[in-house]
Image (cartoon, rainbow, N blue to C red; front, side, top):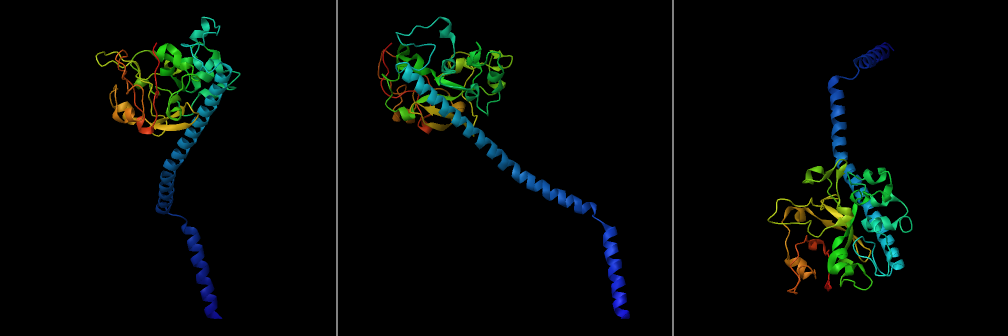
Length: 296
C-alpha cells in the first residue's frame, strides 16, 4: 500500500511538471515550418488549377462566340459580321462600317458582353466598364478576342462570304482567338491610357511586320494560357496553340511545316500575288486559310 501511494504521488508530480512545461519555441517553429512547407507545396497546384479553370472558361466563351457567328451567318447569307466586307445587297450606314465585328452579334446572337472577355486577360474589365458597353465606339480595342482579319481582307473581302468560299480545311482554319497585347511592355507607341489598343478586335496575320522599318505595329500575339492562346476554328472547334516560338522568331513568308499543312499563304504560286508575311501556328495544325484565294 505504501509503494502504491508513493507511485501515485510521483505520477501526479510528473503530470504537473509536464503541464507547467508547456510548448517550447523550438516546437512552435517546427510546427510553423511544416505548415509553411505544406503551403508552398499546395500553392503551385492551386495556381495551376486556377489557370486551368480560367482557360476552360475562355474556351467556353469562344464556343459561345462561334455559335453566335454561325447563327449570324445563317441569317446573313453566309457572311461573317465585318466592317470591311458586306453582302452586296446589305444596306448599312456609314457608322456601321466603323463598328467592331462582334457589336453586330448583340443582343440577338450574344446576350452578355462578358462572353467577349477572357478571365486571364489583365484588361478584361475595360469592356465591362465602358460607358456604352459593347456599343462603346472604342469597343473594338477593349475585347479579349479577335476575328481572323485575313478572311475579311483577302480578295477584297470576298472570303468573308464563308458559305460560298469555304477553305479546304475548316477544322484547322483560324476564325477567332485570344487577342493581346496583355502587357504594356509589349506596346511600342499608341498606348491608350487604360491599356493597349487591340486593332478593332482583329487578328492580323503579320501585325504589319516590316523588316526595314523601326515602326512596327504592337503584336497581338500573346501567351495568355500556359504559353499559348485558345483558338476557335471555322468548323466550331476550340483548340490550344503554343505561341512561345511564334513570338520569339521573325515573321516569314514561307514555313515548311505550314506549307505542308496546306497554308494558302505559304503555297502562293500566283506570280501576280505578292508573297505574304505571316505568323505560323502550324505546330498546332492551325492556319490562316487553306485552299484557293480569289483575286481581288
